[in-house]
Amino acid sequence: MKYMKSFDVIVIGGGQSGLAVGYYLRRTPLRYTILDQEQAPGGAWQHYWHSLRLFSPAQWSSLPGILMPGGPDYYPTRDETLSYLRHYENKYQLEVQRPVTVQAVEQKEEAFLLHTSTGVYHAKAVVSATGSFRRPYLPEVPGREAFQGTILHSSQYLSPAPFQGQRVAIVGEGNSGAQILAEVSQVADTLWITSKPPRFLPDEVDGRYLFDVASRLYEARQRGEAFMPPSLGDIVMVPPVKAARERGVLQSLPPFQSLTSDSLVWPDGHQEKVEAVIFCTGFQPALDHLSPLPVSRQDGRIATTETSAREVAGLWLVGYGSWTGFASATLIGVGRSAKKTVEEIQAYLSAR
Ligand SMILES: Cc1cc2nc3c(=O)[nH]c(=O)nc-3n(C[C@H](O)[C@H](O)[C@H](O)COP(=O)(O)OP(=O)(O)OC[C@H]3O[C@@H](n4cnc5c(N)ncnc54)[C@H](O)[C@@H]3O)c2cc1C
Image 1 (tube, rainbow, N blue to C red):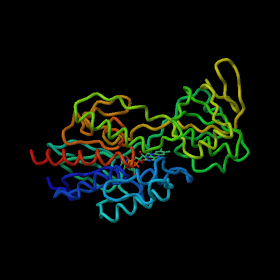
Image 2 (cartoon, rainbow, N blue to C red):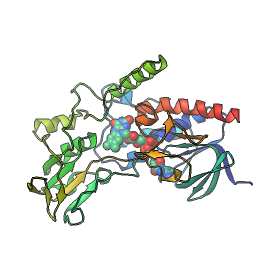
Image 3 (cartoon, protein in one colour):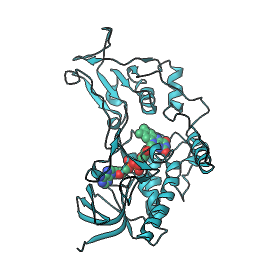
């Protein structure tokens, strides 16, 4: 059977993870392409809120090969991160095709068929690097349909302007929750709802910490030692969050039980009127395109050994979070997973 579009390796997703894999693939003789459903480079960074800055300084925020400009004390903006990713793609002339949506991946005679919005592709190996932005998690809350105000997920939040003068509940104890709270509380009266007491990292700790921990974990593994990394879900005290603390807005309330047309209701019957609720409740990996494959899933994840899918030879998953490599959902961390993945792909294809 002859296919028009046949490659050794197809990478699904052209965000930072897909580009890092592309960086190492282009140094091999393998024929590869990257299929990305966006109209433009930058992956999820195109959709983040306007004021977002990286939580680690530029010097600790680079993909392999090109240093993010700005040095050790500058925290790049969302737009600067987008320019960096655009430049990265151009400089290395990475083979990215867009917009192409991969709808389904199926196995075919020790290879894969990828059904996409622009036709069928054939690949001997597949790397899924689709991130999680496309799968925001919104909890089921009784009364959600009855609520007359605005409900949105952090993935839809762009700026505080629409909430000027309102009473707004921000739900979630992660970094997105703390940062959106910090911003919205400058123009609105806010309530912060967290499922457990928020945990703040010490002021002097920032995203560099991720890199240090990733390196320590990697070295411990090389030596065959156990190393339990500290929690990465804790809140980084970026300047807007520190300023919010000064203003006294980082006080949190326990979870509410339900919504009425205009209020949050707690189990003891206490109610608070709000005009908007912003759920900063995270994401799940975007893996629907892998549904036809015989992979088992738990908590939305696919079983892997580092990035290699345990149940399907020839499939790798890069960038989704610590389950695919420590700190692999960061610019600085994904390079290590990408390098190892490409080494494994080369070994796999040459052994066939
Ligand atoms: C609020 C916030 C702040 C953050 N701050 C930082 C930070 O300071 N430093 C840092 O390093 N990281 C940070 N991160 C994490 C980082 O932004 C993400 O982990 C990163 O974008 C993941 O990159 P990715 O390439 O894996 O996924 P994405 O950037 O989501 O890219 C995946 C790409 O795959 C495409 N895609 C998805 N499904 C398909 C499909 N079926 N077919 C074709 N294409 C598909 C998508 O359109 C997208 O272009 C932050 C994240 C958030 C939410």
